[in-house]
Length: 418
Picture 1 (cartoon, rainbow, N blue to C red):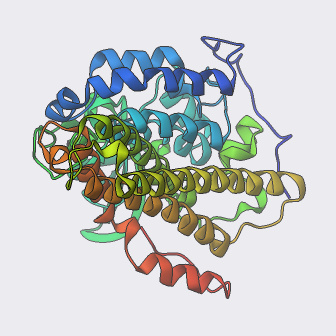
Picture 2: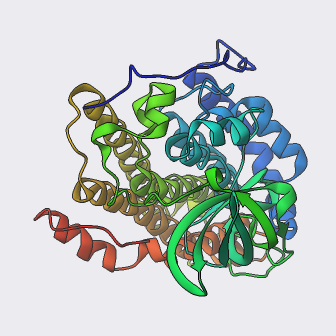
């Protein structure tokens, strides 16, 4: 059964910057930022990530503390609230949404799976932003008290705005590669290589998906875990996690397979909303392909706008429903301790993928229908198309997701997807 009443609070919690902050407040703040984020799209793409000013806006708004434990000055908001904020940031700029989300969501990794000493050392000043590169790389060589870590981890989204890095790596013992673990490194232990943004990739140029390099740094043993963080298929949820015992909140059970893929659901749903808005801006000033009237008088253009808007609405609705289902699993575990199975997690994973696919479909339709003006390099519609295409080549969007979802109908899924 669950152990939520076995909390350990050896010191007073850090004060929250805004003790009365509500979920509705952070959502409203994210909505208000959309115009500013749209104005800064081009410079963020060139830079490879959002600006220091935007980072400070996000910090001041409380966005990086939404998933932070209250013990460390956070708010412990629910899954839906967090992704509603990501959705709105992405409606301002999908690349900025990706960079924010993939640096903000991983505080829950530490708060769920790492022990109290590590949490106090890593989260204890109330500031935590980190990518998690789940594809194992590099070398961890055991030494007294921990490991010497070296390696490079590409596509570490959010790394330019990070305070820490979470990586998966191979432990090498007696010259042999023995196992995979997850570790945390502090910002002064790694370099962020300048290999992202300014046209380096087709899209998501502002996602801050740079390569992180670590050169022979000592990582203490308690900053390393061999838990199956991404999928939970090797996790015995019956007794909870270090996080549920420390914080008394079931959300620190750490269901990261569906939560990770909710990131893409929110980002692509936001991109779809942005494309709908751009299409509506273009139509009154753009001529029909045939005729002299503007596109807002063209039945075909209006049908495309209507279908694209409906797809965008559907993507957002599926995103919201998936978030609520994730939180329902947390609540169920807290109430009666029923096991959470890999097949249940896979069903939510696939649902989040479907939301992202609906968002990408909306963007593609609207770009196709917006006229040649939208194809210009500086036009935001072109940017939304390029950004959505980056999701469509991501591993999480590939056909094997549907195969594994099929297995889950027979409770036959046991893990092994990234």
